[in-house]
Image 1 (tube, one colour):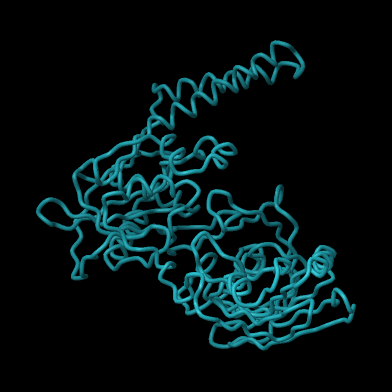
Image 2 (cartoon, rainbow, N blue to C red; image 1 turned 30 degrees about the vertical axis):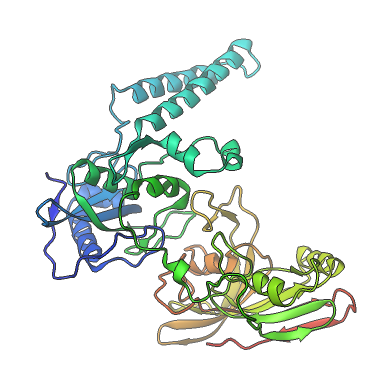
Amino acid sequence: MRTLHPLQSTAERPVKFTYPFCYEPHPLCLEAAKKVRRYVTTHEELFQDAERGKMFGVLVVENADGTLFFLAAYSGLLAGRNDWQWFVPPVFDAQQPDGHFKQIERQLTAMNVVLETMAPDDLLAIELKERRKFMSEDLQQWLFRQYRMLNARSEERDLIELWHDYHSVKVRQKYPYPPGGAGDCCAPKLLQYAYQQGLKPLCMAEFWMGASPKGEIRHDGQFYPACRGKCLPILTWMLKGLDVEPNPQENDPLLYPLGMSRIKLDVLFEDQWLMIINKPSGLLSVPGRESRLSVWSIVRQHYADCDDWALAHRLDMGTSGLLIITKTRDAYALMQEQFASRQVKKTYIALLDGVITQPSGTISLPLRANPLDRPRQVVDYEDGKPAVTDYEVLSVKDGITRIELRPHTGRTHQLRVHCAHEEGLATPILGDDLYGHGGQERLFLHAQEITFCHPVTRERMTLHVEAPF
């Protein structure tokens, strides 16, 4: 098999298979990724397309006699094709010129050409649009049914079945079908081929090669977890029957069940209306999908004496610093008014993983959530919400920039994206494992100062807590 590549290595084989949504690449995957990169760079047609930006994946496997190999894949198409022989084939090939998908696609294209010559309110045009819509939806459903995904138990289900089994009725009502391109990412292609060939998966990793997409942030050579929007339902099914590593985030020391003995918060100010704390890095503001300890769970367990308490705003889990908690509904409403009217002034300190030469400036990049890869945010000039940040370089030492950030808006991950994006500072915050390179003990971002008007006394207040780095 030209897709099965020998892997000579002294590295120990993993005990369990990779948890694909949060992992450190195994040494075997690192070696395999180097070989993939070497292959792509020595094939001009592939390399030219990869330089524009492409996700690649590797899966280390062993055959029946225990010999070690690796498989390689790319997401979607590479240089316009999905059938490059050195890589695993697609789960389903919709690119065949005479296949059902391409035939219907050509009919839809012809309809579009005809509609361009017709008046929008023409009865025939309206009927043709309805026909086009029906055919398009029917074709998409047909395509999803062709992706028959295997798992390690040799069980098989199509993408629509997997989507409906995984998601709640509420989600399915809003998103009845998988997103386009589901099943064409690296991880599903790799596992499908391994199962079909009777190979035992040992470990897996995905890495980016080339330029970053315009809206998102990807770094050449960086490893990334599988996307959740497309791949979470699929891989949850495909991994059944494998002994998979636990989610490392679930073993986090800050993950405690409710009912633990009292955990003290670092309270900097408190009266009958407000509590202001210094949140440590690694502590969520509010609980996530897992039962992870959070500021809010601690407040509810050990501080709040009624249901009126609330967080006036939030900080990312990795961000430390000042966080305001209100104790009454009126105080909460008044604080929200100040945030909405941008009367609250915040100053952050960050360490950037590189050198910034411009001493100060303003970044304006509109942001929106990526529904296929939450919680990642993307830059979107059409549908994004305005996001503005002032910055000032404080010092540069050993290739690390210490910077002051003053956001005018409070978008999710605003400072992290504005620092990392190529149209911002193009230099990610040190320790940012989502938009940067990770590999540090924390995210080096700290909410150092906040100025606001007390919601009841109307006193102008400024609180300051020095960055712990």
